[in-house]
Amino acid sequence: MRRFFIIIILCMMAQTAMARDVYQQPQAFINDVFNGNVPKPKMLWVTKELAPDIKEILGHELRVLRLRYWQRDGKSAWILEEIGKEQPITTGIVINDNRIEQVKVLIYRENRGMEVRYPFFTDQYKGATLHKNKQLDRNIDGISGATLSVRALTKLARLALYLHNHADGTP
Amino acid sequence: MKSPIAITCLLSLAGLSFTSPLYAAQPTTLEELSDAFMELEQKVDMTAEMLEQGGTAGTADSKTHIGGYGELHYNNLDSGKKIDFHRFVLFINHQFSDRIRLNSEFELEHSIAGEGQNGEVELEQAYIDIDLNDNHTARTGLFLIPVGIMNETHEPPVFYGVERNPVENAIIPTTWWEGGVGVNGELAPGWSYDVAVTSGLESANYLPRSGRNKVSNAPAENLAYTGRVKWTGLPGTEIATTVHVQDDITQGIDPTAGGATLFETHAVVTRGKTTVKALYAMWDLDGSGPAALGRDEQTGWYVEPSFKITDKLGVFARVNEWDNEAGSSVDTKKKQTDIGLNYWPHEDVVFKLDMVEQSGAIDDEGFNLGVGFQY
Image (cartoon, rainbow over all chains, first blue to last red; front, side, top):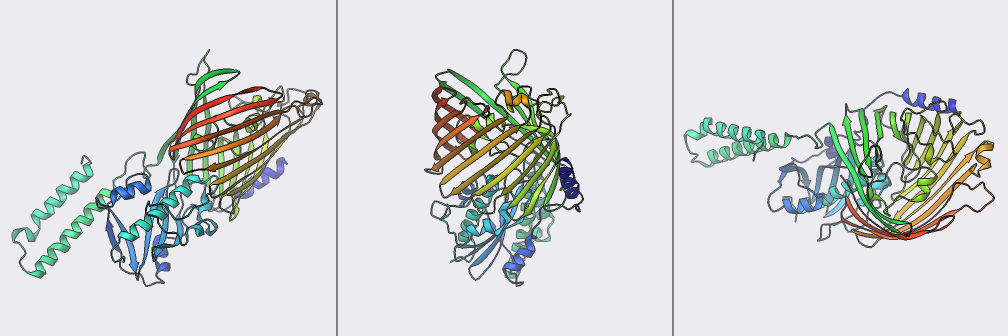
């Protein structure tokens, strides 16, 4: 048993060292969303009208003054970040026809809970809409040991739906 | 606005405006107005960018993060009433680089530590994680043994019941940490593992809980080996199994004691507002010493269904059964039934109430109140 454990540990430590966090660069995500024909980015300013609602969704004030987004034909794409336990989770979210089309974890910096990046988790957000109380229209089943990461992604999903409704050109 | 960065930005903006060629003459044509507007838009963008880049200690931009949790308990039981600030915990974590980080946990129990006092000051975690690649991490230092439901995650807002469940306390024994090295990571989507070689228990009476040396000048005659496999491949589901082995639970002191093996398995399933947790743990101790006391076999299990009535209010029930002398011919089984509720005024703050009834080899009854937080 002793030798088994030591061999396992040495084998794992012999792996090539790389940083663990980037699953897709944000620009590459935007490229994929718009099939290479990326529209010019727009800016949504966090005005006095939007700030209280954003604070209600996130549980804190947004630490930026404006948000960049890409929009065409009723579809908008957002690159948003929210802290899980200690580190921000960079997430790409696509809204189409006021519903979530895609949620994708682009950069994950925490040392646990990374299961949230897999489609078996993020697919739960597909088709979700926002109620008037700014909650999603569905319950999201969490991942044990990743409660804070799940919470962060759910907040970002709600935020993206809310921002889409206030973006330029949204019917 | 007190930020020096903001003041600098405003002065710069004023300076640019003052020196701008457009300051000398007001725009009169549509083209001049358009140029002036674009220049103003660029200045605003630059200002916003500079303000957004300002980071402060303790935010996500900082490499050092502080967190923690705490809980106050009031116990009103037939065996006695007491009030106790059971735990005040500080997490201090530091990111040395993209791949290397420190995680530490410093704890004060029962408010006051020192000679003659009830409390303890403990270092519960202090380890370095090094990411080997995208899927595997090496760990070295003092860390929590990867076992059970509560051993690694026990902040008050994440579990029901004022006190931690007696099965994991008495059998596993939560909270349990040792010093050593390990590797953890992902084998495939939804499949994770942990393996560790650490210091082991030293228990003269063969009870796991009293064998925790907490890496305090601890003997290392007999190391311990832990392996866990966990599956979280379905949202709301966790199934895990841990095996922990040690050649001698007394660290060579007792010739009548031998090897010790812990087997633990659990499942946590959440569907919508309903969660069910179930755990089973068993120690198998070799040697005539443990057998003479019936401690050659020590087992425990519990089942806990819970339901979230609203996002802020949840109710639970738990049936616990454990026996540290399961090898004895006498019935030494202990039982406890809990029912209660949690109220979360904020997702990181919780008020708790539960009613407890013990039976079998123990007898007690009453209720507990608690408040807990994490940050």
